[in-house]
Length: 396
Image: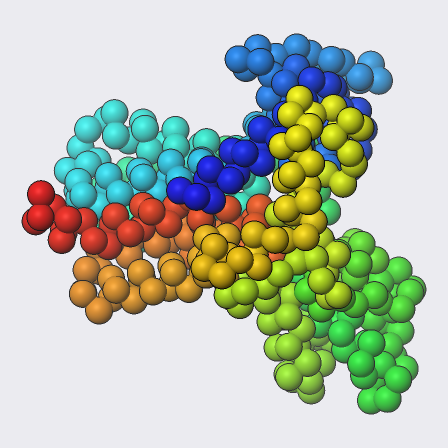
């Protein structure tokens, strides 16, 4: 609850009466905005007073300029609570059992929640794909109905994210965003072993992957190495490079393991404080410009939050930091899962599936920041309710 309140204050401090510029790496050439706009970080544009949008067309006259806005807006309006909605739907399924699927309205609501999850969250489709087999196993009598709903949504999502976005000329993200587990170990190997035990051919192959440059390496964030990484070169010769990756992993397992653990450090260590010498990103990211430059409607709150995030003071207060650290969230989820297993309440494991799937995709990310794990934080109270609802119902 405290982290949710802090999140709302964070958005309020960013509230401004302005129109951000189009054309950055995360924004298509044609955009829809809200008069009230809050920016959590560069490239995030959402909102309009009472959701009454006004179309600002910056297109170059190509086909589908206004249609492009409609197609791309779901990704611009992402919210942490789409994940919470999916978890709550699983709670209803757990409590209803097979009877839940007999009513058509429940099937429609489940389909709507899953569509919302996939449209508003880039990794939502992976969460749904992980949930599907567990749902089909949990309610075997209706596995065909569940499988049809999930498969239809997944196929529809890839049509939306693939051919449909190509038609309306919305640029796709680079696949290197999901290659941190490949990028970081290779960069680390080159920096530490490149002058001694690597062969000349191995050095050249690694340099070719990084744009014929010496790879940059920062232990707690992969952005520097990732920006150099040539994903097209890697995918065009994936067999050759995967062979190199595996061979080096067998030869230097300790370096690989350390590189991966260091990059995911904040997701499992209970008390990481950013920024530090290993990572320049703020743990709770906030615009670095002044309140006046940003156009905030609450400059005093804006200045307070900016100082709070830059210095990470909320992570230095005993016990208070437990509310915000993603490492604590990870161990809390693991503790609650252990409670379910110890009590042999295996049907409740279904509710943990989206948490596990989302966490695995977070581990593939470039850095451990609160904005990635905030959906997990929001869902923690629901997990507590799931684990202890039998005891609570007996007391009422």
